[in-house]
Image (cartoon, rainbow, N blue to C red; front, side, top):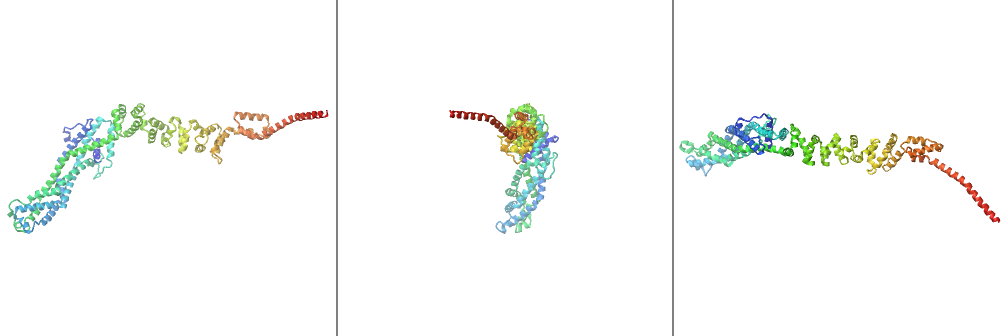
Length: 596
């Protein structure tokens, strides 16, 4: 992530007026306009190395160490540790301590032992570590200031690379991508650089390398290496000649040269030597690591660029391989357009391949694909067709999410429904009702809607899918509002039964002209029904469909029975005399035969 932060600052410098540092521009550098990423990496590394080497040569390591030395209080730590080491020096009794003032060999031996113990002290070792840390922090602060100039140089290089190889939409999107990476970068000061990005971002990669450098320097100074340094300065603690000139205390005091050794361990000369040693170690290590630091900065920039390439791989690949798409992409300059274009071609290629992409480009439908909502994209994937999703979005508009939610595309094509019919189906809200309505033909759907919405919903909710077409067929026969009101009253009434709905609808549809039926039948007197002319009109009304034959039969039940009875009686009256006459003739004949 730190490397990405570095690259973020580098890319953001694309938006700064390009100015190469004088020293860098004077160098013979690798070109930034190559189409090779390897060449670009080398160019970035060169510019970073030259910039940081200039900063390294300008930085005063000795002053940084001196300031850190005073801040840590190292002289006092060494003096305290040396005193303790001198007090503890007891190589076999009083005489050996006294002999350190007489014998140069014994003095050197004591100096080395006391020096090793002085610099092996935990407090002194941690002090050296603190000095190194503080000095390196000063170096980082210095590099941080110089990093802004370096980042501008790297940014110009990256800009040249993008300008030569990529259209404006890609160039802008790279900057937006890096900005997104760097959003969470904190700064110690809370301040930002000219680009609006924290200046500390560029030092992120340095922290990785310099943390290692710091550990290496500390190892050279603290612990055993500190003891080695102590041994080196021990020879300077006691002069090599003229022991008698050291004075009475050195020659005759019971502690011999030990006090002199302890005092010299924290002398200004020794402190200066130690400071030189530390600053030399840091400077040497940083010098050796400049190539690594520069490579790390360049690598961080390249990794951020490659993360952009990976996120937009399909766009970049198609741009190289497909001239038609390349021409389409080149017309855009706003980086905000890249993301929707990327998502659009991803779904096109996923479902229809590059051939489908070419068809959409040739058909000028790319804008429609870019405009597809998430719901429309879900329809495209469900139907394996981007064109179907486009048609549904055009048809449904803001209702496209409801089309996707209720999977209306499984039952209908966009052209199967008018806008009004689609709106009506979706207004049903309940999934089961929408599904039943969607399964109907447009004509059946229109016929279903001849009654009020409440009745329609109840019919959809209660009638089986298998019976629904017959039910709609009966509804289709109802043409007048009076009959429709009767249907609605029945469907929403307490006597409504889905199982008998079709019978009731059939009765209502057959007697749809109830007003005429009432006039002709219901209001006619009994004797009026027997009027031959009225009976003839009723017969014509039944045969033409204007009057229900059920109503006619119900109304003519009694008259019909009376008429039939009269006819039977009449028949009997007509037939009876003939029967009686024949019977009487038979009786007469039998009587005559009996007389003979």
